[in-house]
Amino acid sequence: MTTTLLEAGCNIDNVNGSGITPVQVAVEEGNFRILRLLLWWGCNLRACENISYVIMKCCIQHRDRHPHAELQPIFVICKFQDVRLMKLLLQCYHQLPYNLIHAVHDVLTIGFGPNSMFNQRVNEEMVQILRDAMTEARPLKDLCRGAIRKALGVRPFSKIDDLPVPNSMKNYILMTEELGKDLPQEDEIIERDDMFESYEVPPTEE
Image (cartoon, rainbow, N blue to C red; front, side, top):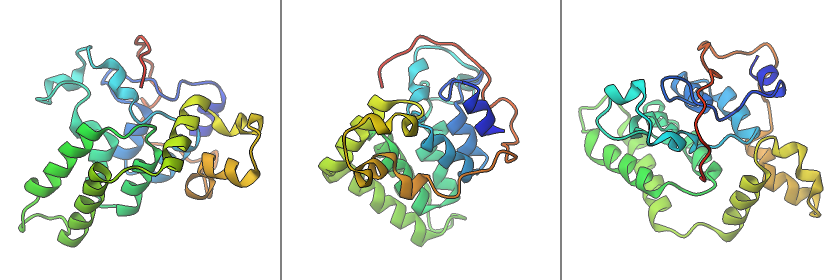
């Protein structure tokens, strides 16, 4: 179903009436295969920031301004304690959202005490990953890949052949190893039916 909607031309980064994008729905539902599919199609992990000046339904429930940190994919993924997926999300940002990473780092460091239901070892590993993202320079090849993927936009796999680079480089840009394997089949769906509900907002730069 998700693939069908994307192939039909649905806006992969549209937000619904609650200020939620398809990629946020996928993370909230814990549907990581659909998340990888959306990333493969070139979704913008920071698309929800395009409506920062609009009051949405979610603004009633959260204290911070929209886009709320608690709804961001990198924050939501913490409750699943999936280290591999956290690394993947950090790889897929065209530009790392350092303020958000800092906020999530603080929550993991301060918010989850020894009596927490979360696995302490995994929690510490995730804290270290976020700390490294904040303090270590991102490799130049990753910066270049992010810039190219941003320029390619949605459906990067349909435009990659226009680049005069070797196939190995094309696979690196597309993140074929991380995203392109075992993608969902046509009959796989996300339970939420508002995933591609449209809420038009003026476009802004990432």
